[in-house]
Structures are given as structure tokens and as C-alpha cells.
Amino acid sequence: MIITLEHYFLWFLFYSFVGWVYESILVSCQQHRLVNRGFLNGPLCPIYGTGATLAIAVLGNVHNPVIIFLVSMVGATILEYSTSWVMEQLFHARWWDYSNFRFNLQGRVCLLGALVFGLGGVGVVLGSQPYVEWATDMIPLPMLHTLVTVLAALVIVDLAVTVAGMLGFEQVLDSVAQAVQDVAARAGGTWQCGADAVSDKMRELSQDTLERLRWVISGVVNAQQKRMLKSFPKFQMPGRQDIIDSLRELMGPRK
Image (cartoon, rainbow, N blue to C red; front, side, top):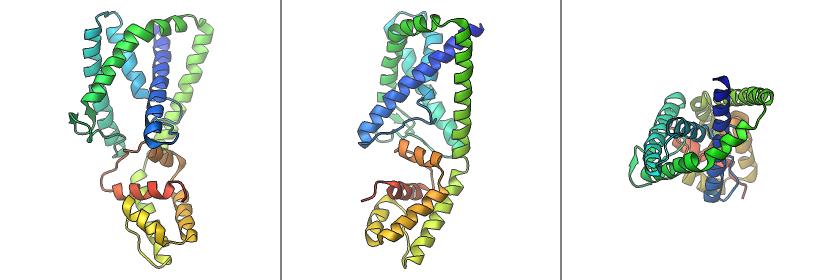
């Protein structure tokens, strides 16, 4: 039983890594820059690992690709919707938004994503998993126990650091807005939040004032929060979106 759970944990990590690679390549191409995609700092997208291991557990003995596709499509859609809702309740923010896609549900899931996950389920269950199982079965038991213990500890620490870094982000954004207004006032003007407004305003400010604004931001926003804003272009926080847009503009490459 313990060995089975350890194997599942390794499978979870493997598919979380594959999901991270897929997401990072996709978003990096869209943003034209390298993006460390994923909620955690490490190279993992846990939602992919969770979906894959659930598919293996439920559909491991199913060989009909149509059934695997349909169950994977529905299951992954439920998982993605639930994850979006839970994260919004915990952090009062949304990490992704499919509102611009056709046939979406509250921007949390969309038909295209469901189809991709359905195909992914078929690829995992009938394609990669037999080889992944063979590889994990080859690991000697003492090494397996040690490997799982070390990796589990790293994931737990990463999760704790990530969650701690994102707690209180709403208050941080309010502090940023006030600090930026203060710097702008000392420079003899006012600051209107929002990406377009910031772009116009940055053209009017001296380089010294802009550097002061960036310095203020670096002292208020921690590294975890900065990474999250860069990794998730669709990151949203109702009531504070203008501040987030301003942050992204000010944190962007210097012109």
C-alpha cells in the first residue's frame, strides 16, 4: 500500500513537471519572454499532476479511447473549475481567465481546454503511463523511500513559501497605490492607475522619478508576488485591477 502511494506521488510529480513545461512554453511564446509558469516556485503545475493521477486511478484499466477521452474531458473540467473557485476563495484572486474563449463557463473553464485535457487523458492512460510505471518499478525500495521523502519535503516547503508570500496581497496592493501616489505628488503631479494611464504618465516623468517609483515597489512587493504577476498575465483581483495593471507596467522592461 505504501509503495503504491509512493509511486502515485512520483507520477504526480512527473505529470506536474510535464504540465509545467507545457504551460511555460505556451505562455512564453504568447508573452515573447521566458515565463516560469506555475503557482509553485519549483517546476511543477500541480493541477496537471492531480488530473493525470486521477485519470490513472480511475481509468487505468480502461482501454477504450473514447471513454477515456470523455471521462478525462469532464473530470479535468470539473477539476479546473473547482481549483479556480477554491483559489479565488483563499486569495481573492483569479489566476486564469477564459472569458475571451467561446463556450466558457464564468471564465474558469472553456470547451477548447476541455478538449485538450480529454486528449491529454488518452495520451497519459494509453500512451505514457505504461512507460512511467515501468520506470518507477525499476527504482529500488530504499532509494524509492528516500526519494519520495526528500521530494515531499521540498514540495511542502515550496507550498508553504508560496502561500505565505501571497497572503495579504490585497493590503500590499493598497500600500503600493498609496506609495506611488506619494512619489508622484512629490514630483508635482498625480497618478492615475491602469496600464494605459501609466504608459502615458511614464512619458511625462523624469528617469529619476521613475527609478524612485520602481524602488518603492521593490520594497513593498515581495519576490513571490512579483513572480506571480509575471507568470500569470490573466491574474486578476477584483477592485484592484488598475493597481495590478500599473504594477505590471512599472515592473516591465525599462525603455
